[in-house]
Length: 253
Image (tube, rainbow, N blue to C red):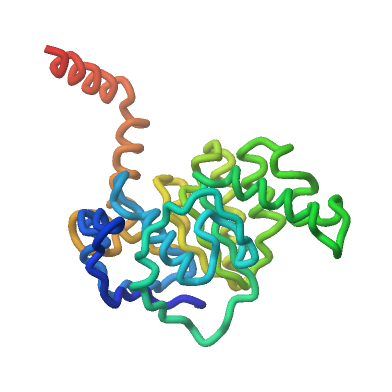
């Protein structure tokens, strides 16, 4: 394990960061232990998953918009100052690789990869792109480029932070990503993943941490709302749709 715990050391979150006070999981953060090779951050929209993951990425030296530690591009500074108040408890070994991959700014990351290929003095573009699926990420579909990056660029023995990776992937491709996650874990890697995907959460060597109104805490796979709602819908889609549409009618009265 390269990262054993995340500790918040202070911060009154004033000024532009004052909104952090309104996120219970961030406001109540003290010491968060990471006990498995894969940690899933789950919760409702606005629960602080991406905010926390971004802060950890910055504290580790990654670009806030994504990439490796060598990526220095910036389109717009929108990250919070939470990273300034985090102390990372690291393991005895340093990772040999690392990447911060976030769905919302993946286009910008792909553009930076293209720019790096043009500036590379050590390899022609076709050789440079071997780490990215053999061609520009912009010349692949969103899902293809996402998986190409994970498969070709993530080498193992590293720490990888993924923010809602399922956004680009079909259910079948999410299963492919599960296999890639297992490959990375088998190669001595650690991953922290913010996700809504019950497919990804099923990974057996992972721990699910719930961000909500209470302090961040572990939950079982079948205890997650993501699993329960998805299962309920797939088991009884007609009944669920009838309930939803009936509620819509009542709301319109």
